[in-house]
Amino acid sequence: MRIALFTLEAAPNGEAVAAFVARHAERIVLIGRSDPFRPGAGGELRQGWRHLRRSGPRLLPFLWANYALPRLRRGPTRLARLAAAHGIPLHAVRAVNGPETAAALRAARPDLILSFHFDQIFAADTLALAPLGGINLHPSLLPRHRGPVPTIWALAEETPRFGVTAHRLVSRIDAGGILGQRAVSLPTGTTASAAARALHQEGVGLLEEVLAALAAGTAREVLPPPLPYCPFPPPALLRALAARGRRLVDGSDLRAAWSSLVPP
Image (tube, rainbow, N blue to C red; front, side, top):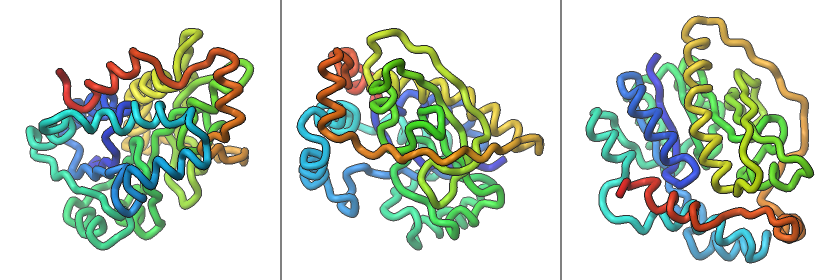
């Protein structure tokens, strides 16, 4: 099975994506890498201001640690090194449904598109460029916590429930048929950042099971019931988390973020 892997380089998924690429390099024919701060998404300053207005200041350390801090490391990233070492084309995804990405997919001829912590929405025409369509790895027990920061929403529950889901890519966010799912027990006091890293790492094994089932023709999809979309959290939710001693980020998360893209 030929795989086109679409991802962005960030602390929550850096280790997990590197492990997946290292273990399956012979099947990966294209890596599409998005920049979360690309001009088309508003850049760092405009995005920061938008998050501040929408969620308040408590979200900014989480976003800075997981997405901005790793970018301060110098030198080729871990993903770029792996792509070069294995001869995998590395495509900068400015617009996933634009002509440049379509051309890259046609040249690579993947059987399947795999979204692994990717921040752009695939159109049906783009997914149709792979005969097997696309699948996504999402760090929650879908349909719970659909959206961009699911571990924050999981922490907001009285008893947090964590897990990871592999599902079909469709035009609605995190709404495709579920192909596989695992509940994951995490220690009390786990931060939202640490939970995101742990769930993506757990997701590598889940993806391997799902890919094997797809290759064998034994994969089964379960259409999830509709539940509300969980957007970036409002200030009241973040204040409630802080009042209960549930943290989004701590010192260990900063150290993990610093080494997530370029190992020391």
